[in-house]
Amino acid sequence: MDTSSLDVRFYPIETNKRAKGNSYTVRWKVAYKKHSKTYKKSAVADDERSKLMAAHRKREPFDIELGLPVSWSSKAAEVNWFQFAVEYVDWKWPRASGNTRKNMAKALTPATIALLRTPPPAHFEPVKVRTALREYAFNVNRRNDPDAPVPDEVQTILDWIKRNSLPMSAWEKTENVDKVISALSTLLDGTAAAASSVTRNDRIMNLVMGYAIRHNYLKANPFPKGKGERAAAKVAPAIDKRCLLNRDLVAKMLDWIGERPRRGSLYRAFFATLYFAGLRP
Image (cartoon, rainbow, N blue to C red; front, side, top):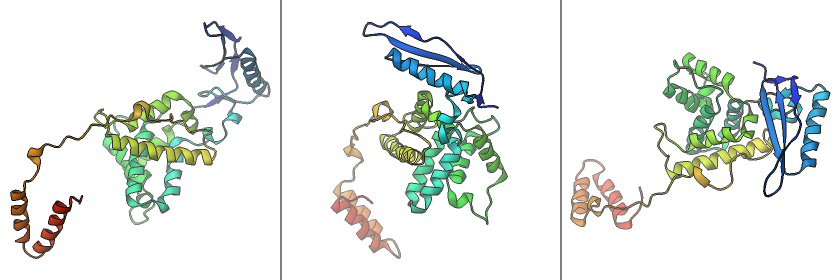
């Protein structure tokens, strides 16, 4: 399907009367899709409309989704999100720890599903789609393992995702950013994710956006500044004292551990240190 068109129509600038001052809306249509942008000053609106019309007179193709000349979009219109995400993983992988790699794949997977043109076909099981992304597309070792090639079923899913992934220019639309934020802050069953998970995903995606800006895929970070509504509500952890071990139970537990064969005395010292020093495992 064509993503650009020479069929562009411009409409007169509209004046919007407001109590705090008028605003001015430029409207135009590319192929079948209408676009508009509002400015506070009429001179600015007229100037922007003139730039669009000048590009049209030069017979420059316009991006149907964005409504702008293709030449204005740079690399954002040339590469889709899935291709970019794989490129980022390949760049980050050598310097990332095992835990960082795992968390990176966990964040990129729901973001990628949120940026599909259409939902995956019914014969693609949701679990298998997420597994294909997390375990293969965003796992350099498994994706490039010569001794264990990517299974045909997984490759079919990844090929479909690549064809149906939105271009990087999709990040310029607020509704797409909102879809990704929602996907990153909710679980598969629709409930809110833990605050720590939301914070981790937010940090990872901001690093991804930084890479996109440095490599000229995006002009600015599309994620809103500050946590706002995308942060999960923090719940103060209340400790039920009835669940805690008292001294007598701890003593019995340590004695039981110490009587275990082979390394009982070693583990007794380990758990005694945890208990008396108040350490985490």
